[in-house]
Amino acid sequence: MSDNTFGKIYSFTTFGESHGEALGTVIDGMPSGVQVDYDFLLSEMARRRPGQSLISTQRNEADRPRILSGVFEGKTTGTPIAVIVENTDQRSKDYSDLAHTFRPGHADFTYTEKYGNRDYRGGGRSSGRETLGRVIAGAFAKMALRQYGIKVDAAVVGVGEVSCSDYQWNPPFLPPLYAPECKEKDKMLALVEEARRDGDSIGSTVECVIQGVPAGLGSPVFDKLDAVLAHGIFSLGAVKGFEIGSGFMAAKSRGSQNNDEIEIVDGKPHFLTNNAGGILGGISNSDTIVFRSYFKPTPSISLPQKTITDEKEDTVLVVKGRHDPIIGPRAVVVVEAMSAAIILDFLLRKRCDRI
Image (tube, rainbow, N blue to C red):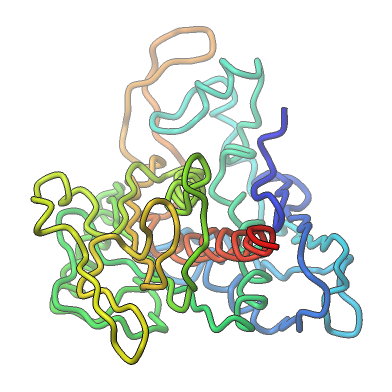
């Protein structure tokens, strides 16, 4: 049973390990004739790339993708698109003391229980570096979505217990934090710096806004658009929470507060509020899709932690190597990528809804 492929019509398969020779993705279902913007692909890869600032791992990877197939004379051909990115700055020796020790907060223990073995060099497939393939698939999806006028943007709106308030959604959001301008921005950045100095890490919140989605995307039962978005976002290793529209606050509201009333404006339906987050009954309603994802602190920290070995012995571990003190800033482009791929997949599915 494969766990490496996502999507139904527009689908992609990621491959490779954190410290292997290369990583990449194979995209299937991309329509022919889409203009391929290689510079845009490079810019998306750069947003995820390590070593951008002191609040990201100092692993120095160029992350320059090489397109092997599916593109001819600058356009997609309708055949599978294979893209590969070589690893150049692996330091596997940093992980040699982890060969028989499980890192707290990581998938080391569960992978061993499932497969009977594991790649201890940076976590192998469980590494955040696997998301590189998702960013590639998302970049190609965004190229296609341009023709529909659909725009996908995400930003860090919370660090620890501090969240942005009264902010304007005005992308592009810039490094190192990839957050909108708000009065709490400096405080959020200070929390990251404090965690880094302490050899610790901190959690974060990423908001995603998808504009221009037409009504009618999604299905009413198991493939609800919001359910698939949640599936895609929860498939990111560090995500521990997801909410769309009013989210968790809906459980504290009355129907009279949470329902989005509708009126006709210029001959078109207009929602007076957007508590639904752009999706009703699992189907897009043409309003802006808004959701938030909640990322746990980076589990690799430089503080002593109790753990066990694969021989079921107690020990104490201090994780070495180069690690992000916060996941959110580099996850922003990954959240966008998964969202873009899902929206494109549902746009292609919609062609099958009616004769």
